[in-house]
Length: 438
Image (spheres, rainbow, N blue to C red):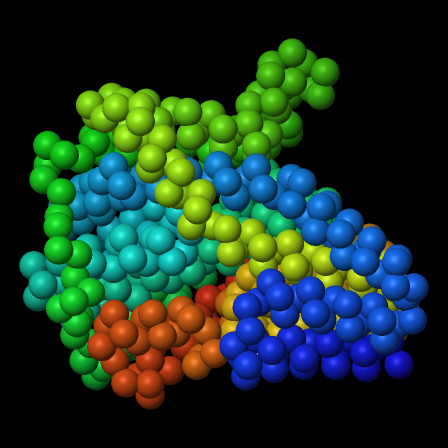
């Protein structure tokens, strides 16, 4: 019976979001209350569970999301993203243009939310394709594969960060493992897959082309742009590596661990960006703080959706559903990594949102992380991979791609949907291979 209640709750979530177009946060709260009530939770305990779920989810995450949004906005508005793109494209040349845009998407995609990165980088893809005479999808798909992978696999993006916190996964290890898994996924879903799309004729709609391209003088330098965008990754990775090489009580280990703490790393990166991408470029502090504020306002709804998913997770735990599901799966011979990936995939197909799919799946499989002995970092990546699978007409990213590249629904399915599915399948393969060595 508890399992049927969970399935019913997921179906209700699907209907509310996809069929009735209800705001995802409101839908999560309704489903959380319905599931808890159906499980027989006392009403006061049910409300407390929802409140605790929201509070525990946002306690750590709000710092990461807020600082990440600030950094992403500074990178975008300063012209650092454009600088990275133009420099790498110029350095790689026409022959290796795909690898230039892959690297650009990866560097810019780490600090920047997917939708922001899409809107900023796709017009630059249009410019590059027009200048080189190459097919639009040949240039665009590798860029979007990079953006998609960073969105689904890597902290500090919303779902991977929230799931890492939920599972108690080491943030640095998740990032390092994620990069290892991401590289082959991007190569196959990006440059290699894009070469099979020659028959699809994509043309950018004029109104979606960025009307203003910054001049060389208006943009920060290449080294500064790349360093600032990647600074949180560098600090977190450094702390993880030092954790392996130096004794735990070594003074340097403690200092580096502090600097590599995700919150501290993001705070340092934002402070550096305020100077390198703002004040050092001649902007006033008032202007820079305006950019920072705009970045934060853009993540309000994402934050609420994650909070709603946290409420559902807590209800599943407090009502005993999670333990019930874990008991059912104890005798299963299927790897917990495959189970987590499959559940995330199923929810992704039903609901559309990768963030919703990832967080909902995490709440369902949470007990497996502790009972199965599987690496929590790999569970984060397995769910992230599944949450990207089979994007179709109920995913906003599907329509964003379709309209920007002026494609039919059929051609969007043949390009975008296959690319996202390739990313998801390659992610699972990478996780399973990595699991044999960890």
